[in-house]
Length: 226
Image (cartoon, rainbow, N blue to C red; front, side):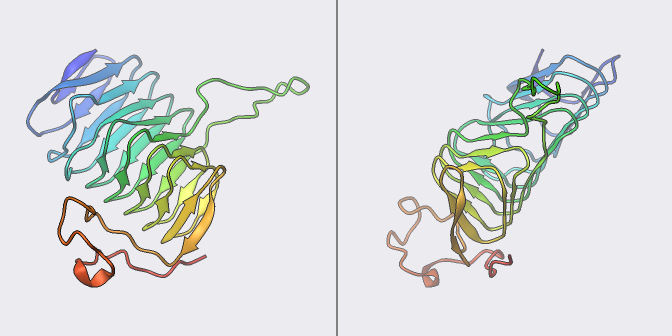
């Protein structure tokens, strides 16, 4: 296990591609071979972040930072986690990708506390009559400027369009378009044609925000396209 984020390579072909300042307290586990951790030189990680490469031929890539990113990221055989620029977390997010799955988050996503994004169930389940797997890993795609609310669970096979919001404690298992609010267990569309902004209700003036005239709009104000 490594506990310093810095450029690195070993005789099994594992590589950390990073040219920024070294960051202590980051845990990186390489158990297999030919794995790559690729980080923008301007990435912002908290010291609670853990990267686990449990198998072979996997990739984790994270773009440049905004306020900070904290995560427990696990990848298995041939799998990838790709995170864009300016993705932020309130606390440590769990992201897993195994068996060739790809978990992708676009730019400017905002991830609240206790969020999990999982391509897999960690353990296999089989049909007793055929012996076939019934819970295969499946890729996840989360678009730019998506807000994942507290306690959200994003499961394998899910797609969320850019500019959307996932409500508190929701379980996402399907595909959803851009600029909509999805919530519930399982999640359903609650409202279309919405836009959200990072301006905090108590930390940024004005403390009443009754309409969009009091803030600067992001580029993600678009009608929902089904």
